[in-house]
Image: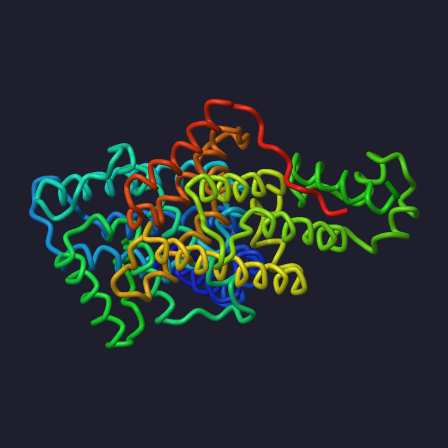
Length: 222
Length: 222
């Protein structure tokens, strides 16, 4: 692994631990035992490092919900999409905890996030339409609500880490909180599903909660 | 109105317009044409002003959803609760746009916000139970979902302004966006309602959207 990759990886850990706001490029260099000059050779400032982390977020989100309109979608698939989405939050939690500040500070990052949002809401639409076609989901009335439900799903997913951090005095988040986020986000469209199908999705969450292990890291870029 | 009240009122406007982060106590004093010393007589720093605004937020939220377990709740009531909740967001939008930063900076404010959150989720619980008792809502299965739905409702409400500001390149928010937030938040429990009752609630939103006027200010403290 080259220094550029090491800087990205180590920065992600430091940002997750302490929040992007309290970590400086000097901290990162010291942590890696490289000179600030070496770090500046790769990245002009902290914003550039954050911007370099973002494609990994995007890649993990794309990998989390690989739904296609042509392939049958099982309850097991739906459960796994939710868990993978929430694991991505966990793995990049500094991004979602400080989202507004990060996006306000960097218009390029803000546009990348909006692009991810458009893609993800589009995927939710494809997922819902596919489940309706399979007879596992009923179409809401009015039908426009389908995209509103996708919007709610997106908001709940992208706000979950912030909700956890503002809901409690201690900032620590654990595995159980994360799995609970999958269920919360699932509830946006669960009432439209066939009860048996919905129960099977929940069984996937229950099984993960029972295992109580830390979430797998999502696939890493490069 | 004394200087203390004028400072609070003017600060709210400036914070809403420019974001709390970019407004200093000097800006506020200049805006009111008072000396910085006069401002410091009332407030030691900006955080104290924000803290003094917060009881108004809390009061507006309490006034927005005055549901009681004993009184029959109509669809008109439910529609109005949602609109009033969203109008509160609009009136204090700087709080909700910068929520994480504000709470991270001030533990007293963070505790006040958590208290408001507990109260509001409790009110949602009372609202849902009342609607179930009236036969207008079915109990979710498993019944624990009732509080999860309340949690989702809280997250959607408190994240709506941030969602709007991160979703678009321009930061301006208008009346239509705000009314749409009432509908989005309503969708968390709409599928559990009797269809006719749900349609009546939506008619309240539609009527407000047609009127297209700016939201009323919620009742002000003092």
